[in-house]
Image (cartoon, rainbow over all chains, first blue to last red):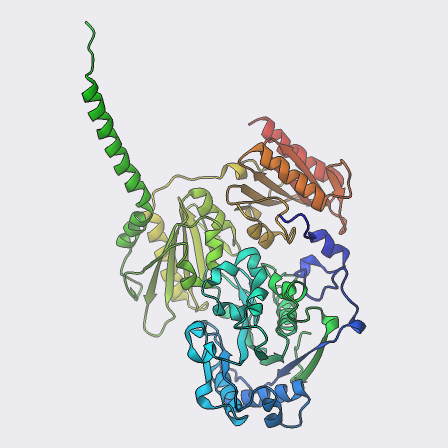
Length: 299
Length: 312
């Protein structure tokens, strides 16, 4: 153990007033952290639409595309989707869309298609756009990309606590298991690698049917997903993940009828802020813009 | 009359014994795969309308991630040797996945079983739990998982139970309790809360203690965590056995410094949420009380452990 490194224990979080029993890190005001007034806030857009999924869980791709446009417009304070997307990528760019193809809960193909379509409208050449997950390191578009768009569903994760936007980039390293220590605490380091750093233009955390609790080695159970019908969109992956985590935590407490901390704690989200400077973790440092369907928003 | 064995005969005998020894060692080192092979060969190909999709796949400590992603770290934290994965399919139904983990020892099979004990206890193997979509049990050095995405299918649950019993029947092993778990005092013990583990990552999963490994846990340490309730009083015990008493002493000092730093020489303190924490060491065994409802109960828990240790 590094003797120089400050040790945070359960007692530190109790002193800070964050209930460790509530998952410890969500919404905590951390010891020594700057006040909300002194920090530039990260904008996060949470958009929901009651009609994006029907009762059978079938996805309305058109509605989803409209949600994405509205979110991107709000993110960039634009009056048109076309203008907003042009701020994300342009004609001379090569764009990798880092998706997530986990069998049980993948990034919807309709969302991938919507992103691709908007990029083409913004002027990016079709051959300079690729969607990939596990093959991203070998994909020539990703190897030459000037911009990345990051998109995946939020879900419970057996080791990291949550599968997040931050975690989605683990496929950008050849040996992902080397980032598993301490419940994947140092995933933020991947974002600092030369072929990744500074390229991400947009993060889309899919909250259509999040998985809020995992069981067993395969993690997925239909019992523990629900139709939240949302997208969380931000330029800041930490703020987006922190916001999604709060929703997951609230859902867990509601479902189990008591404080039910996300376990293991998704330490990598906090670490991405305090250790790697990748974005804003604390709610006081996040400007949350909520649009659309408001019922059972949970935050 | 004395009989003197010729030196050449002794050398030949020594060489012969060495060959036999190597053969035994080689057989043992491959017994993990061999035994999973034995289980694979003993499993039915068809059960309740479901058919085995293939002969299954074998994964080791490295390739497990390609199968279950980061969840593989849970099993590696318990020294997994290999995993045999088989799928059973039926038209119109979700696949049933049977995973047999060779954990290398009954301690670790028990340990990984205790990592997730939520559900309804079932009498399969040496301990089993059933949920709508997942049944798990342990027996001998094996941890067995049966899973179906469809949590509402009674037919799938029946097949899962039948398969579980078949697998359990193929494993021959006596009941077992890890040594450190046997040290837990029985009075007030919540049996279903018992966890067995080695590393701080698993400890933090069940009880967040620190962002750093202040207890110096490694794959060589054996630890158990359990909840206690008695007469309205509650608390938790964390017992850790280190390979050497010197390592336990270092861990004690580290824990005192990081967690009990405001108590001076005292081994017991009230923490910020009003509960009590305490520490004591007996040779290579560290006893930690957590979340005790009062000072007297913290002291009582320490005393119960000390009593058991002194009778060891």
